[in-house]
Each structure stands twice: as structure tokens, then as C-alpha cells.
Image (cartoon, rainbow, N blue to C red; front, side):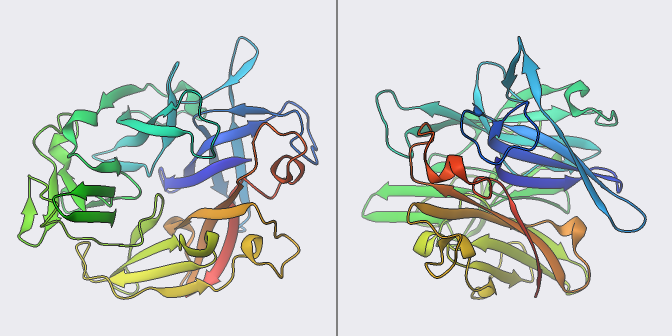
Length: 335
């Protein structure tokens, strides 16, 4: 089981999948996670499709000194965000996570920075052999941005991001997803080159009173992709309300919006529906998104993840006993 599940089409033949914290075991055919190791950080996989439309995925788990370790980052806790390709270079945004000492609450961590794994050659079959260098974007971002690349879009010479943003002060209390962009030519040196969408248009200074909210609900993971068939942008995300009980979508003619009010793709997420056998009172769901490379006409391939508020270290917890939690749930839905 792995958290998150972002994907990107690498070359028309392969898709790279990125996961967050991951349960791992050498044992095949496991029916539960009791005693499993937890990889804090990120893991990855590569999927392909056959000519008869069969899906294959291979997981690449990294080991050092006999122990499972994160695919990206050494001695760091890095969560992956939405990857993108610009000028044939693969960029993987990473959140720098720091645990809060002494805290035992569910969210006992903080986001301490933003890094990018830059990969100029991703042709090899084993992703762990790709040459990687790291960029630190932390100081290039405006204050209040908690998670930059909740989704990433390359469009007309820029990379667009929909950061999760929070500001409290000056009689303002702002929370939600805003819009930022960075020119492709400045991906290697982003300082002073980020722009933010405001009531005055694109501005390099992010003024809380001027910034425009794209998605006021505030989601840590989503997808925004262009639908050539419909000639519009499509956002897919899991509602944070009621433990993530619905998968929603919204559309716009431009990345800047205006975004139409959301509509429902999945009206009831089974894992948080009290009337469903998969339900548990501690479960909550998030990380809803679309995977555009697999779309066919009006059928979208979407994923979401469900987690548990129980202690991950409790070997008798619902999370440890049930493999359907804490792994991407894949659904084909018609829009």
C-alpha cells in the first residue's frame, strides 16, 4: 500500500507513478499489514499498456543495507507532488516533511520546504538508475504557501501550480488553493520569478488581500488537466468535507478560471459511507485526482486514497488488518 498516487506519461509507452509513505514487505500474498515496514517518504512504479489494452504495473522498491528506503532523498522525509515534463526534462516536486517532536497526533508533522528532483534522462527501464539532481525552491516561494505542486500543468511556456495557501492576519483569514506560475526558462533559478494570480492579474508579489482563490475548499492533492475533446480545463478532487465523501470535478476555459461550481463524479465514497461494508469510523479519504493519459472519450480514470486516524503503529488497527486502505483506489467514471 502507498499514499498519494500521482502519475505522468513519460513517452507514450510508460507512465511513472509516485506514492508517498508506503507499507512494504518481502512476503508475497500478504493478507494484512501486521508487522510490515513503513517507508517514510516516497516510492515509485512504472506502468505500461499492451496492444490489447491490458494494464501492467511494476513497483520499484529501493533497499539499502537490507532495509527499504525512500526512492528520492537521502536522510530526508520527502513526499511527492505532481510531476511534470518541460523541454524533455522530468521534474518531480517534493515536500520536505519534518516530524514534530513529542507529538502523537495524526498530523504530527510540518511542511518545512519544497525541493525538486530534476531528471534529464529517464530512458532507462529502472527508475532508480536515472541521474537525479535536486533543486531547492523553498526560499523562492511566497510566505503562506504550504504545498506548491498540489497539481502541475505545463502550458504556453509556463508551469502552472495550484498551491495550498494559508494566511491569517491583517483582519484576513484566507485558506484554499491559489494559482502560481513559473516560466519554463526559470525552473533552474526560480527566485523572484514566481507569479501569482490576483485581482490585478499576474503579480510577482503575493498580497493576501489581492490573491484569488481557485478552490476555496482547500485540497492537498488534485489534478488539473486540459481536455482537448471538450476544449476546457478539468479539475478533479475529493471533497474534504465529511471525511472526503464525494469525488468532484470543476471546469474552466482557462487555467486562471473562472472555475464553474463543482459537480459530482462519485456521489458516495464507499470507505466513508456508514452503509457500506468497507466503512470504519476512523477512516477518512483524500488525494482524489484524474490520470489523463488513460482517459477514453467520456470515461475518466481516477484514484483516491483512504487512511485511518488510528495509530499506524498499532498492529491490531483497522489499517493494519485491511489492505484496501492506504493504497490508491482506482475507478473508471463517466463524466
